[in-house]
Length: 209
Image (cartoon, rainbow, N blue to C red; front, side, top):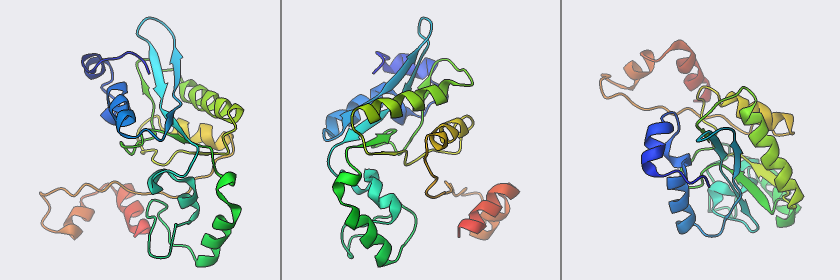
């Protein structure tokens, strides 16, 4: 990880969520030792660095990071894996189970495991930065024998479309979409809250429901 401290991060990473900064990641790695850190960095000039966090799991981790759950798999009928965002018929679950663990692991999870973010932290920007980070990360992971790459939580923030595009160029597919709907307490009720949304977000929310 870059040797950024908290003071440096507060000053220079104002656009980054705290969950993808080295300070957070070091704490997460101390708490979750089953994932091997596999971070990708880019360097340019003095204090110009970029970081795409990643972790390799050789055995099934928590359900939120298990790539099989994004295909509708769940460990048992009475344990619901919610992160895939879809309920699939048992036949689909059985097909994923039949592939076995070795078809998915080792797996690379891009992002912050405890921060629910697949993003990059950076102190400089170029139009090709995210593509280079993603490509380098995936290629290096393939050389390590990684079977599957999953980027669970790419927020819809400016610039992140380049992460999605880079992954799609490497063969990835979008599994599901979600809306972060923060309820404003100034609304009289939920209908009023939805009515105040921009039309695009309101349409997206209604379609998701």
